Length: 104
Image 1 (tube, rainbow, N blue to C red):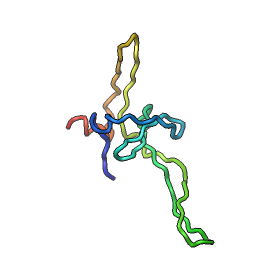
Image 2: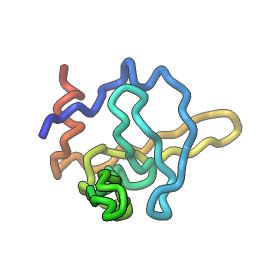
Image 3: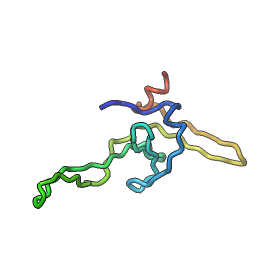
Image 4: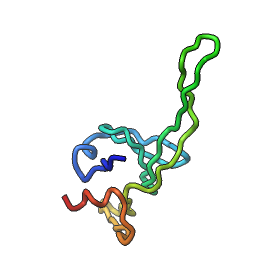
């Protein structure tokens, strides 16, 4: 599995809609289409299966719903007070796939 989570860079320059997946607000990487919860850092994908239509003998894709890959992106608490943005960094003691790009 390729680890392609971004540092601050190309993916952060795009404005994408926040969409709700598994009851969590998520963003979608415009380059790789990864779906990441902005609350937890969890990565989601839509599982599918290929079924054959018995009448037409054609293949169809059927959704099996959204599944989690686990927490892949570090998140931080953010608060805005009187126009000032405060960021509380999360505990880095447990490594995440996104961490390796912090040191490029």
